[in-house]
Every structure is written in structure tokens, then in C-alpha cells.
Image (cartoon, rainbow, N blue to C red):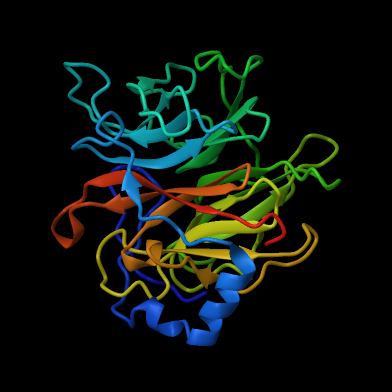
Length: 336
């Protein structure tokens, strides 16, 4: 894939690309395409994105959300101070809870060791049964750079009962940077899979980030990850989030991002009729989400409501202030 020079975001998250100025991707969707997407995907439009409120979003950077199956627990990464005298604003994973869907989020709490440590810890993601927490970290013991790690817990409502984390092994982790894990349980009979993105140097894939997938073997080892060719482009393609039914996947991409601002991209999605099928060609997530740059999506499906949690840069070209926002739609159960 074509090399694209990018800056490394000092916050330690998956690298956000500086993107070439090109046409707005919304202009690439023709009227017939809009009709097909609208008819196939949902029975209602996405709601206007709204922020998660002042307990979650601060003047620091809040990003990389992950949501529990019941929608009442939110994991995310922030570089906010860990305590009043914290002078080293590194990246850590936090958790907040709420009493009901639609209730305000409570005060976030820092996940203690062994999840967080002195290294940068980021991109949390829960398994469907919530016994596993996947995340990326620069801690010692990996293969170099950011690697994907996993911690486990016995009780799914014990926010602080996580075991010591272990790296996922050479099928996934390399000397390059691996980020953005998304676990797919594969309830239809196949083996569990892990989607993630990898940033490599020249000659080894897209330096801005490509999406890969690995399959869990009967021996408990993850297979050598392969590129998901249908989803990748010459620009950044990162933070894939697969819906638990395996029929839709969301991610953010720098393709056709428009302005060249650090961290700017748009949300895209692909669908398939069966978990054994290849993904469709990616489509831009519709308005009003497509009305501005958005990154780092995670999809949550509960009942007939499909919700996207994702991230906006509130400052734009003059600075970086990342906040978590959300948008929902009613989904036809027969739609992909």
C-alpha cells in the first residue's frame, strides 16, 4: 500500500494521520447510493451526535470508548490527571457507570494495576461475555511499540477484579504498533476472531494503519493475522468495531478526509449477509454523523436500537481536545 507520511500523536493512541486535501467524501455518494444505503441499513436516520456530559468529557483528551453489553458501563482512555498532584499526564483506561440507558454517566474511576501502569494504556475493548478486556499498551513484555494485551475477570460486575494482563502472542503482536482490538465471539459456529489495526514502516503495509483479523485456534493461540483487504485503503484505516451479530463493522478512515487536519477522518461501515462472507465495499456512515470529522467508533446493539460511540476533536485545526459523543438509530431486525 502507498506510504503516507504521518505525525505520531504524543498521547500514545493509535496514530492519527495527517491527510492530503481531497474532495469531501460526502460528494462521492450519489443519489441512488443514498437510496440503497437507506433502504438496506435501517428504518430510521442517525440522531444528532451529542456529547456524553461533563463527567466524561473534560479539557483533557477523552477517547477510544468501549461499552458493556447492557450499555451501563463505559470504558475509555483519557490523559486526565490520576490524582491532584499528578504531573505526568500519560494515557490510562477509566470506567464510568450509569443507572439506566439515558441516565447521566457517573464519575469515572481509574482502573488500577494490573490494567493500568506507568506505560501508555489505551484502546479498551470488552469481549461479548465481558470476562475479557482487550487493550493496547507500551508496557514491557510485549513485542515492541504498542501491543495488544488481555486481562480476565471472574465476575462481570467487578470493575476492579481484572487479572494480570498478558500479550496476545506473535500471531497478533509484532515490532510494529498494534492497536484498536475488537473481539468477535462468532456465535454462529465459527472460531472467535480479533479485529485490530497495525501501523508498520515502509514496505510492510500502510504506515497510517491497516485493519487485520486473527482467529483463535483450538490450542488457544491466535493465528497469524491477515489484512482485511475489503476495508483498507492507502490512508489510515483504524479502530474497527464489529457488531456482535457479525453482520456489520464500523471503522474510521482517512480516505477522502478533506482538510488535512491532524486526526481527521470519517466513519465508514461495511456489511455482510453471513459471517463467512467477505465484507461489502465500505460506505460512509450517513448524515448527520458524516457532517463533520469523526474517529474511533464502537457499535452497540441492544434491542432494536443501534448506537455508535465515537470521538470528535472539539478544537479542529488549531488544537486537540478529543471528546466522546454518541448517536443512535432504530434498526430493522432484518437489515444487515
